[in-house]
Image (cartoon, rainbow, N blue to C red; front, side):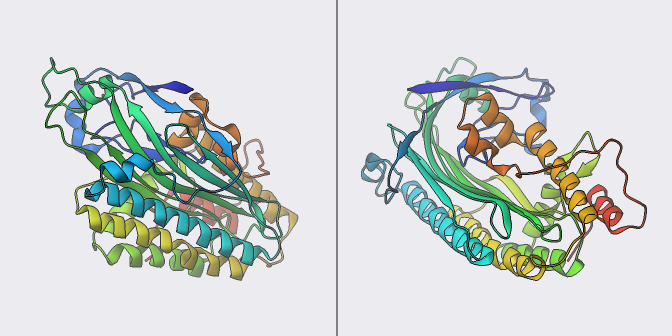
Length: 393
C-alpha cells in the first residue's frame, strides 16, 4: 500500500522537489525528494510556499538479499540509455561500499558483527540496513543502502519549472533514488564519530509534458565529529577529502568544505555539530560520468580517511570526565539530527521505519544545565573550533 507525506517549503521562498532541489538521505537509507535551498533560485523568494505529497510504497521484510533492487523493466526499457546505466552502476557502487565499510568496521571492532535487515517494495526498489551495536569499539554503527521508486506530484513539478506556462498541468512525475547512508559512533571519547552519505536522484519526463527532459543530480558528503581535537587526525581526515576532490576539480574541496560547515550548524547553539568535511547537493552542472566517478571516489575514501584515526584512538585510556564530555557532544549530535537534519525530520513526519530513521542516534547522550567548559581546556578548544570553523589543510 502506498502512503503519502506532506512537503512544506520554508516560508520565505518557494522550494520544491524537482530540478532545483534534490534528495536527501535519511538514516534509514530511504532517499526522497526534499525541500532545500539553492542559491541559484533566489528569484523565487516572492513565490508562495508549496505543499505537495510524495507517494512511496511501504517496505516488505525479505529473508535474502537480491542481486539488484532495480525493477526488471528498468533495464529492459532503458537498456540503451546512459541514465539506466548510471542507475545500475550507482547501485553496484553503494552496495560494494556498504560491504567494504562493514568489513573494515568489524575488523576494527575485533568481534562484533552487523545485524542485517533486508526490505523491498512491491513496485520495485528496496534496501539493506546494517547495524552493529555495543561492540568493543562501536557504541552504534549503522550502514544502510536503498533504491527507491516513487512519484512526484504535479504541484511540485509546476512550481519547480519556473519557466513553464502557468496553464501547463503535467501529471505525476515518477522518480528514482539510490544512496548509502552511515553514522558511526565509537565508545572511546578520543575516537570521533563519522557520518557519510552519497546519493543519486532522477526524475522521468512527465508523460503529458512532451519534450520535458529527465532531471538527475548527485549529493552527499563525509564529515567528522570528535569530542577532542587531535590535529593530526583532523588534518588526515580533511586531506583525504581534499585528495578525493582534487582528482576531479580543485574548486570542489573549498566549495564543499564550506557547504559542510554551513549545513551542520546548530542554530539554537550557535555552533557546528563537528569539524566538518565535505557536503554537496543538487550537483548536476558537470558531466554525469564525471560526477558518478566523483561520488564513487568519495565513498571509497571513507575507510582510508577514518579507520587510521580509529586505530590510533580506540584503546586510549580516558577518565569519567572525558567520557561525560563526549556524552555532552553526543547530545549536540542528537539535537542537530532531530531538529535540523532533513532526512531524520522528514522520516519522522512521514511514517518511515522508525528503527532505521533513528539509527543515527547514539546509544547514550547527556545534557547538563548551563554547561561551559573552562576556557583554554581541551574541551573548550573543541567547542571553539565548532563555533569558529578552521581551515585544516
